[in-house]
Image (cartoon, chains in turn orange, purple):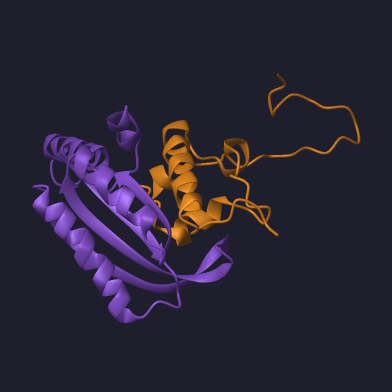
Amino acid sequence: MKSAKEKRPAGQKQYYRRKKVCKFCVERIDSINYKDVKLLSQFVPERAKIMPRRISGVCSPHQRLLNDAIKKARNIALLPFTTE
Amino acid sequence: MRNYEIMFIVNPNATEEEIDKINAQLESIITTGGGTIDKIEKMGKRRLAYLVDKQREGYYVLFSIVANGDIIKECERRLRVMDAVIKYITVRTDEEVRRMEKIRSYRQKRAARRGSGAGTTPGPSAEEAMQ
């Protein structure tokens, strides 16, 4: 792995990726309820798939809870399985 | 005895009385079986995320109950038989409640140890307590 300080070949742009943080840890949301559609829909993009951790930055314990909640919500037609 | 939530969707064309009748039926099943009802919430009509029984809308009702497996089994059987009910789900909530209490007590302990200024600094406390 290259460190940020290391010199790169000329012409290559340097990117500083912002550190992602888990929304649930930061805002101290403990329970992820399947009825909370407003919260859950932030983690289902247009195709109605569950957003991966690598994009959303959610930590693994919270992602697990989120997964369960989204799947329950889908079961009772609060969230879609797919888009038509 | 465990805590459960039963949520079901009634056909939007059903009248208010029919919904009340369904609720009363479920209530009697639960109370005669020895369970208790914490809350009955009529969440009202809302759009479904996908078509269910060719319906775009549905009337949501939520029961919060304390019951055992037999009662739940009977409730689900009845819901399946009813024509007006188009979808239902039963969720166990006692584990979730216990987890929340654990986190809360952990936070309080932490806050007590730290003194007055605790509780505002974000940290991995919630994560740790969840394990």
